[in-house]
Image (cartoon, rainbow, N blue to C red; front, top):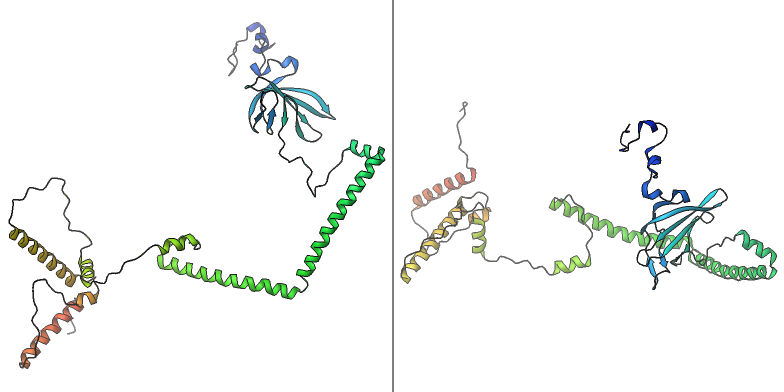
Length: 352
């Protein structure tokens, strides 16, 4: 009967007595367990550190993290902890590299085909405390000269450390002899920096409010100052230019641009071309001046200024002896001005 998710057939006479792997003479792990009878299991091993391969004609480094198909085998014990060996083949040279676990020092040791790359991590640096093993302690107990050498080295090291400690204590006493003055000096520097920071924060907040920015503005740098100094803004001094800009429609002419080619114009005389250009200029000026007077969004000063039309002259106003005529003209002007200002109609109420 064939089991679920197995894909292997077991005859009825062997069902419940053995497995398909035993009948086929194979291991459950396939090729990984082909040497299981020798106590070897093939696993995926990752280099714990960089290793120099000594089997290569020219020593080649194998980087940390490179993975190999390694043969895992138990080679011994350290008390109750097993010691495993990982043997792998370096493909470029065909040599074998073996690495074993070291439970005593909780590390890996390269035992064959290579050596660990020296990065200086295992060296005893100045200030580090060296922990001696039981063998070293026993040797010092048995060898009096070795113990004397260690004692002399410890004394020299203690003397050097005492000198350094005395210098640090002297510097501390000198710097903090007057604690009030030292504290005052630190607070003065902090106060000045705090005022600068508060001023910068106020300027940043004002800029965010003015620009309606919901983002954090970083501090100004020297590169920002250089770029800002290279920007120049022009000024508009001509009133005609300002008048043309303010009187121009923001919605465009409303005509769609056609992709068709414009028809060819018949040839015209120079006088006719000049007349058409003057006519077009006059039309544009009239349109702009009319919009400048009618548009309520334009500045009152710009709207109140007299508009000049090219090619027309205005008569100079003189004093008139006809007082009634002047009063009539003044009343008409006042009515027009009040109509322009209010723009509302005065309807009568029921109480009137």
